[in-house]
Image (cartoon, rainbow, N blue to C red; front, side):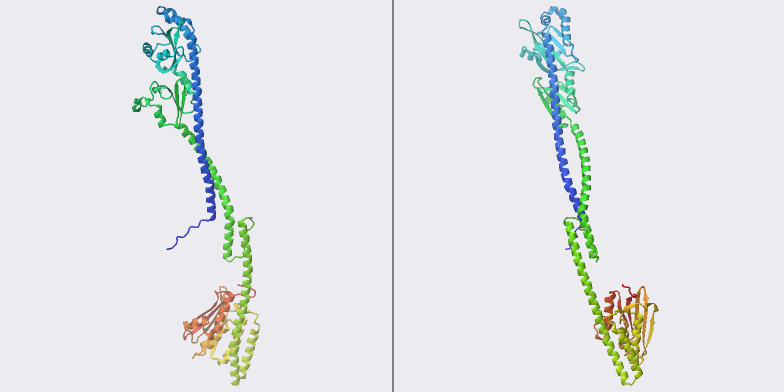
Length: 583
């Protein structure tokens, strides 16, 4: 089964992602801790602030109660009070005096409390408002506050209760004590009903800008004050009917806390005998949460932006030298050995670049030595190939001289010897690897002059050489072996008139020599044998092809086309180079 190709992720992105994670994860953890600490701090701060405000409010309420107790004592200290409630027939006589005493006692009060003075039976009553019906019933039956007063002799009783006088005016706490005559007899009662506005004014100072719901309860969960739902005042919070009451105006504070609450503060006032419940709405937390969330979001965006920039710079700082080193290695792989890696950084990457440069220097030294040895080897091989051609040619020439001499053909012997001298003189300078086309053709002319004598002019030579290439430099002895092959193997067994064409022209900077004969030709198998050097009779042909490829590369060389009994065409291609030019 083929393995899935592994996705390549550049080092820069790996480093960038790593730095982002390393900076983002602590940021998230710190943000979470800050959020939790902020919520806890907010909770404690609001709780402490609310509790302190409630405590201060109750202290001020208690101060007010003490003030009202002082009013009661001031009224009690007046002897006219005892006298007024002791004789029923003198009510009208004492009425003005008693009310003057009451109003004089209340003169400094901004919100006037309700004052009631009555005898034990309730037959004589002095009151700043019509006495409530509840007092008439309680007085008659000695219930409620009157029972509390009777149980606590010579003490002022604080009695939480709701009393409604007129629409919008009511009291929620009452104070009362006994009136004692000089004989120590209990002759009546004096009551002060604390107005709701007095308590409400003090409670409003608790809010301090918070959305608070304050409920003031007595020990029996009787609602004295409800700052948001006044309809609950005068009702019991624990009354079972409230759980089934569909009208929202009777919703208890516990139901509201269960539905919408961020913080609940309870304060027990032992002196007043009340409990204050403060419910901080979740709107406070939501507002704080929005502000805190916005601050954390802005901080996170700024921190993340800074983190992105720093991570990018660090990732690039680390990965860029490695990327440059990889680029240098790629150039070396393509064959450019003159490049150098930047090794100025004093770290592991700098060491890597330094060692790479040292390796590259040693490689260049080694490559130069290899090139030099290859050049020497090529020169030696070329000389060996030339040496293989010369003995073969000399042997054939000497054979012609021998037979011409035997036949007494003196002129032919002179011609052969003369042309052979030219050929040998041309071949003596073996150090010259390249000769002009003109000199090569001159060599061929001398060679053909000898061969025509040998074969009794059995073939005709047609020469067509472009004069523009005569001064071009070509390797020595690249045409003669093919002319020899055309004569010896192509025309020697040919029954008709032999013909050899020698052409030379240039096209697109490439010289092409063509040696064409009308001899017996070759099969494809014979062509392959000649090209692959598998025939001992055609070793010179293969040597020419090898020499050209050694000089110029595989793009040049010898190409043979032939048909059996129709002739052969040999094409030799070399670059068109003049003296001093290189490929």
